[in-house]
Structures are given as structure tokens and as C-alpha cells.
Length: 263
Image 1 (cartoon, rainbow, N blue to C red):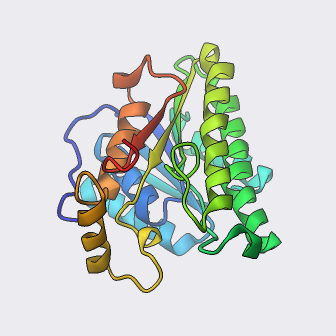
Image 2: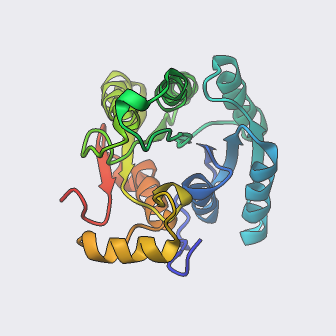
């Protein structure tokens, strides 16, 4: 987290259970910490246990929040269903879900992309979101208070395209469309579904090959309207807004947070 990271002292999520996939680092970890800071009981998920345990430790150290780490592969329907069940078994409900797990395999023209890299991105970025959405909705629609879901898409895809990222962009565009379709299907079930599309964020994914963080900052200062890239806490703030009661009439939107890059 950077010096600009701030977590609210509001308690919009007190008594609610939140699930975050891809929560072992970066945006996912910051979202989990932000939800916990506002009172949520947080279930953090990912494929590797050690970084999840670190997220749990950070949640607990930040203010004594409750957190549970669950290893899960979002490309496995059984894993995702067990993940939702674990959240409900431990905390009694599933009120908020953030489908953040994703992967980028690219940097070269599409004709040079391997089938394995194509399939990996499709499996995690699209099928993984579908499987998570399906399991989360099935639980939330059984609850009197329903629930709120945010899928992490990207400005790459529905909002802009870049050389060397055709396959990744296709998968993230699919997330945006899937979000809108699911939102229409299930709002009458009491489940609100939206997306956040980050632009460049202060994580390793936004570094170009051979680029340092100083190089990146200089590039952003010269090319982005805001003059800098977003922090993970700024992405978390957008997610918390959409999953809170502050956004109770926001359904099927794709909120872009990109320092003005696609303005």
C-alpha cells in the first residue's frame, strides 16, 4: 500500500460477510482490508495459502477484524461452491462478493500467443468469474437481504484496446458483458451486480518489461490526464461504494477508474 492509502472509519459493512477472490496480494488484498476496516467479516480466497494467511494477519492486526482464508481455484466449480459454503458455515451468510481473481498472459501480437496462454486467460478471467457468480448468486438469493457482487474487469476490453493484449482484452470485455447480463437476470432476486474497470494501478501488472516504478511514474505523468496511475485503495473505494447501500439503485454498471485515460 502507498502513502495515499486511506481506509474509511465508516461502518457500512458491520455484520456483513464479504468474499474476495484473488485476495493474496495487490487489489484483492486491499479490497479485503478495506471491507474489514468498515466492519465486514472477510473471507479471502486464492490458490496459494501463504499469501492468504498474510492477508488474514493484516486484517486482524489492523483492528481485530475477523477473516478466514480459503484456498480455491476459481476455474473449479467444486472449489468455488465449497468456498461459498465455507463462508456461510463460518459467518452465517454471504452478503458481499468481489470477483477479483485474474491473470494476464500477453505482451506479444495475437499471432504469437500460445493456445495455453489463451486458454489460461479464458479459464480464469471468464469461466472463473462465471463459476463464482453462479455460486454466489445461488446463495445470496436465498437470503432475505440478498447481496451485492462486484466483478473486476479492466479498461482493456470494453473501454480500450492495446497492442499485445488482444486476448486479455477479450476476456475482460466478456466480464463487463457478463456482469450486465447477470445483473438483469438477478436484480429481482435481491442480488445487485456491478463491475469495476481499473486502468493502470500501482501493482506489478502495470509495469512494462524492464520498467521500474520510477519509469512508470514518469510515463504516467506524461500520458495520463491525472498525471499518475491509481492506487489499489482507490480501486477498493470504488468497490466498496458499489457493494454498499450507498449504491442501492446502481445495477449493471461498469465503473471505470483509470486516471482519465479513457475520458
